[in-house]
Length: 204
Image (cartoon, rainbow, N blue to C red; front, side, top):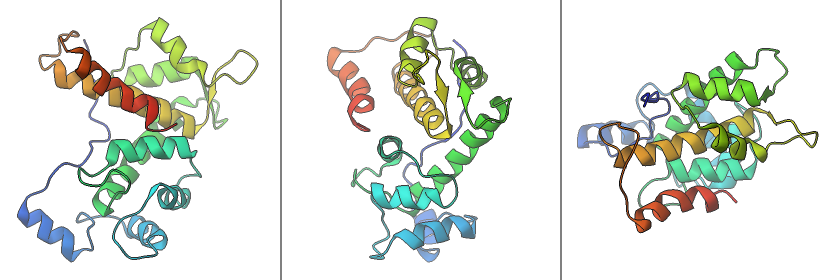
């Protein structure tokens, strides 16, 4: 099994030295671009240092586009902080912004016609380039929700991010069980549900 790339690493706990540095910078990691800080601060109107899904949607629209709330909720789930599942802070926002920059570069690379949309074959190639060899039968189910009504799947950047992050998120969950990267793992029914259900309900 080809090991997928390390794109979009979700921030984990930080040590005390890093924590002090973050507090001095208003919670943002050192080196965060001013535009990213500004995008966060503009929507954090109560100055709590955290933003919810609607504020995140507004903040991302300043640098990318207005994402569907379904995609926003998926991103919130993936980048949430352990003690608050409904909001994200500066560190998570900076990591999410950087993650989207990587996904946009990939999207533009495989949008060979420059139409602002990619078809199913371009999506397959993009995922494969990242190490995600999705089985054909699973891939067909995955892209069925993006049918344009004429029997053809077309994904704009919003849909591409949603689709890509579902594949990446589930792959990461599986890798937690398949520590030897053998392509197989044993898990209980409970573990299976805990792995799958959040991706089915967190962004509906």
